[in-house]
Picture 1 (tube, each protein chain N blue to C red):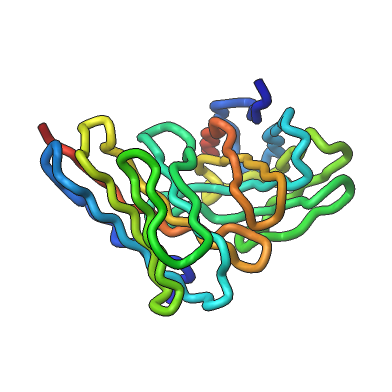
Picture 2 (spheres, rainbow over the protein chains, first blue to last red):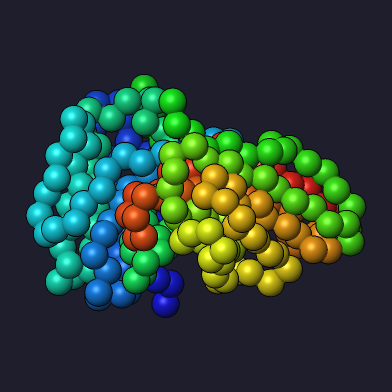
Length: 109
Length: 112
């Protein structure tokens, strides 16, 4: 079992819709969770971090964490074509970040 | 503005040659990391350092080495380049272990 699992996609959503990206992790003691966005040919950039159970909102983005289910998700409201990218979930493993393989999101006009 | 820079950005080398990828950060972060990114594998940790003179192996360290002689730099050396090391390499840094890491722009390495 991979430490951090994501559906590779592509996830295709129409412009203006809500995109839901999911991630599961295997290490129950993980404490910190991150979502990165990566455009093709570019480096990953941080979108959000979340540390406690529940929801955390930042503009059009909402991160959701459920430690009991070992599940973290990212919702993107009012999706725009500029949101088309690969979204990487990252989870701490003791003192290091372990990344999932990413979900490719396509937002079509 | 503080930043993290990698060089070279693109390099083609021959099998068996030694290659060094440079990474320099101006955030004064203690923690620095090298990842490689390949289709189907995502980002995999090669080596990391939590401070000067500290280096540690990640999950895919074979064939790679790093040294940390100052806070700002963590060069990655491929001792004898192999075609399997053709990849995109990202350097990253963070203030605290297990916390947000910030990436450089990447180095595209092709081994022929």
